[in-house]
Image (cartoon, rainbow, N blue to C red; front, top):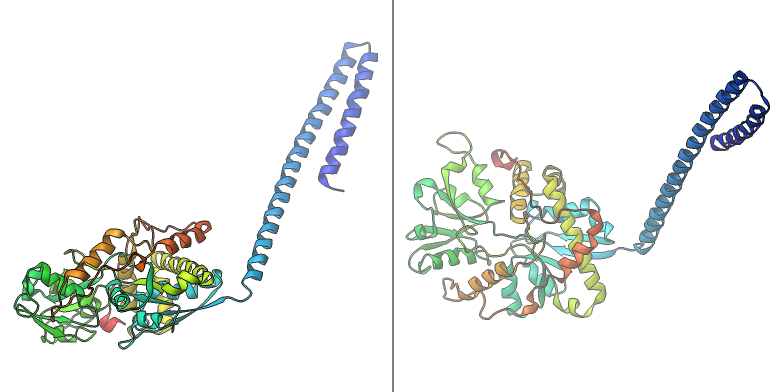
Length: 431
């Protein structure tokens, strides 16, 4: 017998007793007898009230239990439906710009944390390298999506590659020119008469833009030196200012031992020209998709939205869990070690967050600045990155908006307005 049923029976008996006592009270002639009957009736009434209150509370509890069971059942049904729908995830390939490192941490995190799987995707992340041009791999149909700097990709697009920027992950440039402080190079105008290192391969556009801004002729006013993707030439005195990324090569000089002190170099040993801060920063890491497939293949359109959504979620995870995200990258096998990769995760986060309009959003002003520099900055041979404005179809925010909609129920902060970087201590050699 349930507790509620028992209480209901007691309540029924109490009402019966009250009825009987009322008859007794009417028959009693003495005041004392009547008072005793009234007291007993009051006690029975109090007990009945308590039982009634308990019954009401039990009914509420039972109703809440039923509601919880219904909610659990609904969630189970949704999970079953999603599982059935995702019986065979869509296979997707992503071409990186470079070797495995925390520059791409958000994509490795999306894979490791199951965000791609949640979007019914099975993603293959393909390493880049010196001889690999991601946007060419995409245009040739070798991969489904590629990461590339915007000016490089636009140059490929002008040459015939039908590719589209569908998510601008890095909101600001991370390119620097780094020199020893005693060289006195604190702004682009100071490049005059100096040996200025650059990597080539389309990574030098901001260097030329800075020279042009300072009114310097790259052919006569500076000595441009081809630089390896490291800082050896700077540290050995072969160049006066080296090209570097905030998240990579700049860390390399701070991981090197100063022969004069026997300790690691410190930031105060160097001067840094930040191309974003001097106004010639160009948009960098973006997700590019196949333009022809976007125009004609509904399945690819759907995959693109899901891929962008899961990738965004990966970057949100790295913003909020820099150490864990770094561990994920380390497990993927980068060349440089733990402190370097943590530095890189932290610095890349600074290039993404905050994203005032939302992660992935392609800002018109930043896009226009990148295009303007690409159209009007001559290189050593006098040619520019672009010869005409790219078509309006070169980028779209459609898939960013679709991705945000897919993430609505996740409760994610997609702007990172309150983002604060962590403090990272670099070790010798980045270990």
